Image 1 (tube, one colour):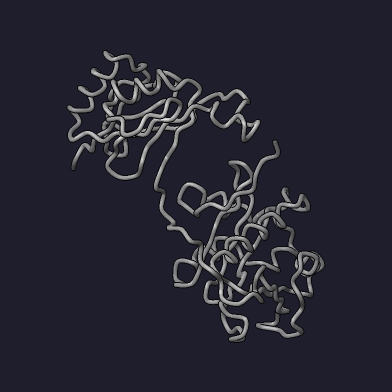
Image 2 (tube, rainbow, N blue to C red):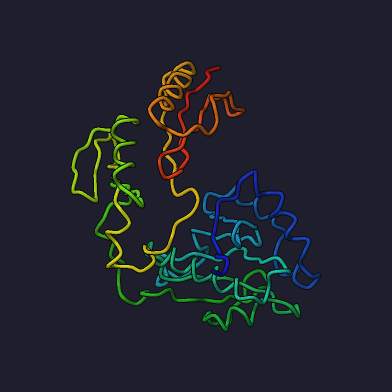
Length: 296
């Protein structure tokens, strides 16, 4: 499977890598887009900046920033956004990743009712992005802003009237964990972890839980719907984390879990993020955690 492009939050963990990406651009390209360090700084003093790191698999390869206000855009085109900054590091250019990023941006903002996206480009540079945007579907407005040519893109559904919100709440109501063999996993959640069974339908069991609903379902249930569920699954598939009232309770919980059949992974230890944690495994090898705050 080809590595996937994803848009992730800019954090202290990826900031240095994003800043270094500006150094990969040619001189001509560097005249077309601000340094990523400058863009991040501008985002932190703007109430309308939406920025993301562009990842290929787990490697940062670019940066994008959107002006949520859209600037001086005609009222007929609103709601609108402005594509403020967009760059892909030179080693990853001309591979189709820029289009994938725009596809995700368009889907994200169109879903939120945005009608139009604007951007502006430098025309005088030989390696400017003017042709890329026109090929994607932007049109030249024939106007300039701060010396740059202004381009416009109508987002999908822009002429269909006011957007209709999804008839659902953006909140997870149920988490279902797919398992190979339900019987040992049901017993583990019920008899070792202490969940009370709310519903049991043979190959599907739902547990009492204070908050989001929690269930297990045997993968064979989905065989008739998708051949992908017949493929063998390897490695960690999910993690459950359980809070204890005190660090001493972490030690006691870990001891009891092992006595009742949980697999030993990592004994209790104090972690740098001011918690005491211990790791254990369920019958299918998934690793879970018990933890407690260490306090000040």
